[in-house]
Length: 310
Image (cartoon, rainbow, N blue to C red; front, side, top):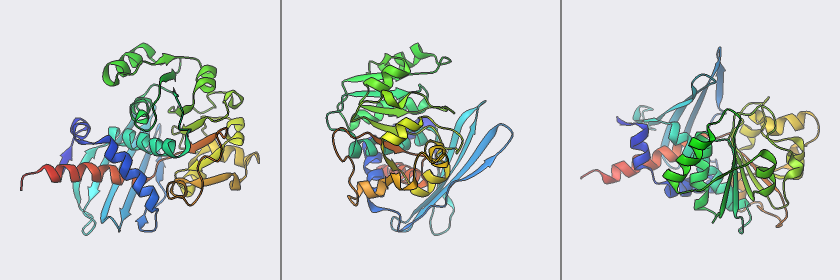
C-alpha cells in the first residue's frame, strides 16, 4: 500500500489536473456513482464525518474520514480502495486534499457561473480553505485585486505575508461591507454560525462560492443574499439536507425548493444555463461530496504509478 504524507501529496498533485477531473466528473454525473449521503457522528466537542464513494465507470473507490472540532480544527484521512476487494491500495493524509478539492470545485463553479470580466476576488476567512481558494481560483479568472475579511481572532498580518511569499498575491485586508460590495467573486471559507455580511451590499453580477457551512443550523450568508441569487448546489441531496444557508430560509418560507435552480452536474453538462445575464447574482453552495475526493486521490495515485520505472 502506498502512503502519502501531506507534503508528499502537495509535491505530487497537479492542481490543473484536479480541476479538470472534477469538472469532468460533474459533466458525467452520478449514474455510475454510488455515493451515500455523508454520515455524521457528533461526539462531545467534535464531529466525525464518513464519506465513501464508488465509481463503476472509472473503476475507482475510496473513503474519507474527517474529524471536525473547535480544539483541533479539521483533520482528514483518505483511503483509495481496490474496487474488486475493497482493500486499501493507498492512504493519504488528506487535509490539503480536502482543501484543494473544495477550492477546485469552487473554481469549476466560478468558471461556469462568474462573469468573464471578473477582476476582484474577495474571501471571507483566513484559514486553510481561504488559502486554497486564493491560490486556485486565479487559474480560471484573471483577477487583478484580492480582498480578505478575517475574524477579530485572526492573525491577519501573518496570513497576508504567507499569501505574498507562497503565491505572489498582494491582498488587501478589508471590512465585511467592503469585501461584499467591491468583490466580483466572493468565497466564504469560515466556520461562521451567523451571516458574515448584509446581502443588500452585493453588487449586481456578483458570483458567490459558499463552502464553510455543512450543518443545518449554521450559515455564512443572510436571507437577502439567498433571495437575490440564482442558486446552484454541488448535489441536491447533500445541500438540501446539510446546508443551513439554504435550509434556514426554506424553513422560514423565505425560499422555496424550486428556487434552488440547478446542481453542478446540470450546469457543467449544459443541461441548464449558468449565468442568465450579466447582472445576475449567482450563488454556488457546496457542502462537499465524495466524488471530489475520489477523483483527487485517483489523480495523485495515477501520477505516481505513471512515474514509477517499468
